[in-house]
Image (tube, rainbow, N blue to C red):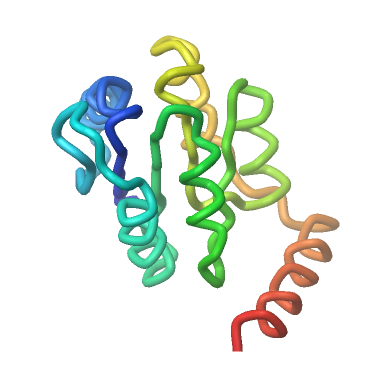
Length: 149
């Protein structure tokens, strides 16, 4: 699995830790984020990652801004993207198991490094359960067809 990651200025420090974790755990990582804490506009970074995740089922994304909220709003504007802003390992587990989340959004200013890495680990390791959850994902797909013509 390939991981594409991007960040804005608020997520720069946490991005460095996440990239290090991913590489240590033998993930293929493409870092498309900001390389400093100099102010940049997060929508451009979210768009880049969302389009890459859209293009392949073998790619997942990680987006980091100050809260994770802005990145998740933008990423979810793209058909087929299920970006989830998570602040706990439970959220990370459930968004994969029930929502088949393909982009994880983290807050560099609200989630500590160790908690963020725990969230990341469980998000990467949790498989989508399917079954009854397919019904909801099919409804989401139908809504996307209506809204993304």
